[in-house]
Length: 171
Image (cartoon, rainbow, N blue to C red):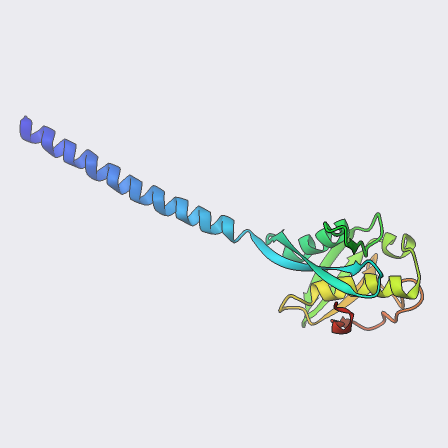
Protein backbone atom coordinates (compact mmCIF):
# COMPACT_ATOMS: atom_id res chain seq x y z
CA UNK A 1 0.00 0.00 0.00
CA UNK A 2 2.82 2.37 0.94
CA UNK A 3 4.70 1.54 -2.26
CA UNK A 4 1.58 2.30 -4.30
CA UNK A 5 1.23 5.77 -2.67
CA UNK A 6 4.85 6.56 -3.49
CA UNK A 7 4.33 5.52 -7.14
CA UNK A 8 1.16 7.66 -7.39
CA UNK A 9 2.98 10.59 -5.77
CA UNK A 10 5.86 10.27 -8.24
CA UNK A 11 3.44 10.05 -11.18
CA UNK A 12 1.66 13.21 -10.00
CA UNK A 13 5.00 15.02 -9.68
CA UNK A 14 6.01 13.90 -13.19
CA UNK A 15 2.65 15.02 -14.62
CA UNK A 16 2.97 18.41 -12.92
CA UNK A 17 6.49 18.89 -14.29
CA UNK A 18 5.39 17.88 -17.81
CA UNK A 19 2.44 20.28 -17.58
CA UNK A 20 4.67 23.14 -16.47
CA UNK A 21 7.06 22.38 -19.33
CA UNK A 22 4.30 22.47 -21.97
CA UNK A 23 2.56 25.52 -20.49
CA UNK A 24 5.87 27.39 -20.55
CA UNK A 25 6.45 26.42 -24.20
CA UNK A 26 2.92 27.48 -25.16
CA UNK A 27 3.34 30.81 -23.35
CA UNK A 28 6.66 31.46 -25.10
CA UNK A 29 5.08 30.59 -28.45
CA UNK A 30 2.17 32.97 -27.84
CA UNK A 31 4.60 35.69 -26.80
CA UNK A 32 6.62 35.21 -30.00
CA UNK A 33 3.43 35.36 -32.07
CA UNK A 34 2.32 38.54 -30.29
CA UNK A 35 5.68 40.13 -30.91
CA UNK A 36 5.33 39.34 -34.60
CA UNK A 37 1.79 40.72 -34.86
CA UNK A 38 3.08 44.24 -35.51
CA UNK A 39 5.77 45.68 -37.72
CA UNK A 40 7.50 49.03 -37.64
CA UNK A 41 6.81 51.05 -40.81
CA UNK A 42 7.58 54.54 -42.09
CA UNK A 43 4.68 56.80 -42.99
CA UNK A 44 5.69 59.82 -45.06
CA UNK A 45 4.07 63.14 -44.21
CA UNK A 46 4.66 66.67 -45.44
CA UNK A 47 6.94 69.08 -43.64
CA UNK A 48 5.43 72.35 -42.40
CA UNK A 49 6.51 74.22 -45.55
CA UNK A 50 4.97 71.44 -47.72
CA UNK A 51 8.20 71.09 -49.70
CA UNK A 52 9.48 67.76 -48.36
CA UNK A 53 8.40 64.43 -46.92
CA UNK A 54 9.56 63.19 -43.54
CA UNK A 55 8.92 59.72 -42.14
CA UNK A 56 7.04 59.05 -38.96
CA UNK A 57 7.55 55.58 -37.50
CA UNK A 58 4.49 53.55 -36.45
CA UNK A 59 3.77 50.01 -35.31
CA UNK A 60 1.30 48.47 -37.76
CA UNK A 61 -0.67 45.23 -37.57
CA UNK A 62 0.78 42.64 -39.91
CA UNK A 63 -2.56 40.90 -40.52
CA UNK A 64 -3.15 43.08 -43.56
CA UNK A 65 0.05 45.12 -43.53
CA UNK A 66 -0.40 47.12 -46.75
CA UNK A 67 -4.00 48.07 -46.03
CA UNK A 68 -3.21 48.88 -42.38
CA UNK A 69 -0.25 51.04 -43.44
CA UNK A 70 -2.45 53.07 -45.79
CA UNK A 71 -5.10 53.46 -43.08
CA UNK A 72 -2.46 54.89 -40.74
CA UNK A 73 -1.24 57.24 -43.48
CA UNK A 74 -4.80 58.50 -43.94
CA UNK A 75 -5.11 59.20 -40.19
CA UNK A 76 -2.30 61.71 -40.51
CA UNK A 77 0.81 62.45 -38.48
CA UNK A 78 1.04 62.24 -34.71
CA UNK A 79 3.75 64.91 -34.68
CA UNK A 80 2.59 68.53 -34.77
CA UNK A 81 5.64 69.38 -36.88
CA UNK A 82 4.26 67.40 -39.85
CA UNK A 83 1.24 67.95 -42.08
CA UNK A 84 -1.43 65.54 -43.22
CA UNK A 85 -1.13 64.61 -46.90
CA UNK A 86 -4.40 62.74 -47.48
CA UNK A 87 -7.70 64.66 -47.63
CA UNK A 88 -10.63 64.02 -45.28
CA UNK A 89 -13.05 61.27 -46.22
CA UNK A 90 -10.52 59.16 -48.16
CA UNK A 91 -10.97 55.41 -47.90
CA UNK A 92 -8.84 52.58 -49.26
CA UNK A 93 -11.08 50.32 -51.32
CA UNK A 94 -8.41 47.76 -52.12
CA UNK A 95 -4.73 47.00 -52.56
CA UNK A 96 -3.23 44.46 -54.93
CA UNK A 97 0.41 43.76 -55.76
CA UNK A 98 1.49 42.14 -59.01
CA UNK A 99 5.02 42.10 -60.43
CA UNK A 100 6.20 44.58 -57.77
CA UNK A 101 3.51 47.12 -58.71
CA UNK A 102 0.97 48.03 -56.04
CA UNK A 103 -2.39 49.09 -57.41
CA UNK A 104 -4.15 51.08 -54.72
CA UNK A 105 -7.84 51.76 -55.15
CA UNK A 106 -9.18 54.81 -53.29
CA UNK A 107 -12.66 56.29 -53.13
CA UNK A 108 -13.39 59.48 -55.06
CA UNK A 109 -12.67 61.65 -51.99
CA UNK A 110 -8.95 61.46 -52.82
CA UNK A 111 -9.46 63.83 -55.76
CA UNK A 112 -12.80 65.43 -54.86
CA UNK A 113 -11.71 66.59 -51.37
CA UNK A 114 -8.14 67.46 -52.32
CA UNK A 115 -7.02 71.03 -51.50
CA UNK A 116 -5.30 71.34 -54.89
CA UNK A 117 -2.11 72.95 -56.09
CA UNK A 118 0.85 71.27 -57.71
CA UNK A 119 2.80 71.05 -54.44
CA UNK A 120 -0.18 69.65 -52.54
CA UNK A 121 -0.76 67.07 -55.24
CA UNK A 122 2.91 66.07 -55.24
CA UNK A 123 2.93 65.68 -51.43
CA UNK A 124 -0.22 63.54 -51.50
CA UNK A 125 0.90 61.28 -54.33
CA UNK A 126 4.44 60.76 -53.10
CA UNK A 127 3.44 60.28 -49.47
CA UNK A 128 1.47 57.29 -50.76
CA UNK A 129 4.15 56.10 -53.19
CA UNK A 130 7.11 56.54 -50.84
CA UNK A 131 5.25 54.91 -47.95
CA UNK A 132 4.33 51.85 -50.00
CA UNK A 133 7.67 51.37 -51.78
CA UNK A 134 9.40 50.75 -48.45
CA UNK A 135 8.13 47.17 -48.71
CA UNK A 136 10.37 44.75 -50.60
CA UNK A 137 7.46 43.45 -52.67
CA UNK A 138 6.64 46.93 -54.07
CA UNK A 139 8.80 48.94 -56.48
CA UNK A 140 6.08 51.10 -58.05
CA UNK A 141 2.59 52.34 -57.19
CA UNK A 142 -0.41 52.99 -59.40
CA UNK A 143 -3.20 55.08 -57.88
CA UNK A 144 -6.76 54.21 -58.89
CA UNK A 145 -9.98 55.97 -58.04
CA UNK A 146 -12.95 53.66 -57.71
CA UNK A 147 -11.17 51.00 -59.79
CA UNK A 148 -10.38 53.37 -62.67
CA UNK A 149 -6.94 54.47 -63.81
CA UNK A 150 -6.61 58.24 -63.64
CA UNK A 151 -4.56 60.72 -65.65
CA UNK A 152 -3.93 63.03 -62.70
CA UNK A 153 -5.17 63.59 -59.17
CA UNK A 154 -5.98 67.31 -59.41
CA UNK A 155 -4.41 68.37 -62.71
CA UNK A 156 -0.66 68.68 -62.17
CA UNK A 157 1.01 65.27 -61.87
CA UNK A 158 0.90 62.54 -64.54
CA UNK A 159 -0.51 59.37 -62.98
CA UNK A 160 -1.01 57.35 -66.16
CA UNK A 161 1.96 55.11 -65.31
CA UNK A 162 2.97 53.55 -61.97
CA UNK A 163 5.33 55.75 -59.97
CA UNK A 164 8.59 54.87 -58.19
CA UNK A 165 9.86 56.27 -54.90
CA UNK A 166 10.90 59.92 -55.12
CA UNK A 167 13.92 60.23 -52.81
CA UNK A 168 14.48 63.88 -53.76
CA UNK A 169 11.53 64.83 -51.53
CA UNK A 170 13.13 63.55 -48.32
CA UNK A 171 14.30 66.00 -45.72
